[in-house]
Amino acid sequence: MLKTDFLIIGSGIAGLTYAIKIAKANPDKSITIITKADKGESNTKYAQGGIAVVFDEHDSFENHIDDTLRAGDFINDKAVVRRVVEEAPDRLREIISWGTRFDKDTSGDYDLGKEGGHSSNRILHHKDITGFEIERALLEKLRSVEM
Image 1: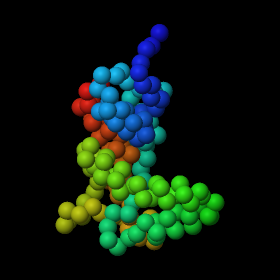
Image 2 (image 1 turned 45 degrees about the vertical axis):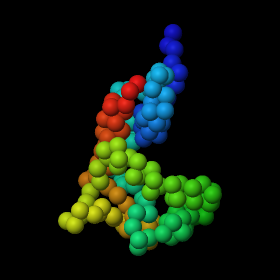
Image 3 (image 1 turned 30 degrees about the vertical axis):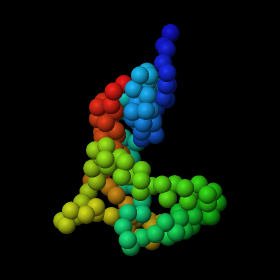
């Protein structure tokens, strides 16, 4: 019988992020991550698209919220959309601080793309394997945290 203090189901971006945070906050507790395959196998790994986030002075939370509501045919929960959009820059900086790399332009600034449904350049990518890069960085960070 398995005994653990924290049981995390799934090793995608949500599960690994939670594992990193819980390991830092509870170094004396045991953490078990259950996956359907190996630890690097998740839907996150296969996500090719980038991350949409307000990340420069030419964009705003209100514009991103409006774009998201419009793309969702206005049936989205506006409070949830607002919370996700407004927290996105901090979450992005967090995964960058954990080692996730995103494409940069020749000036060394993040190369913010513009994709369908967005009125501003706000999409960060890592080549055409953004999810793979996020998964790689989170797994590496998790290995460095005492567990």
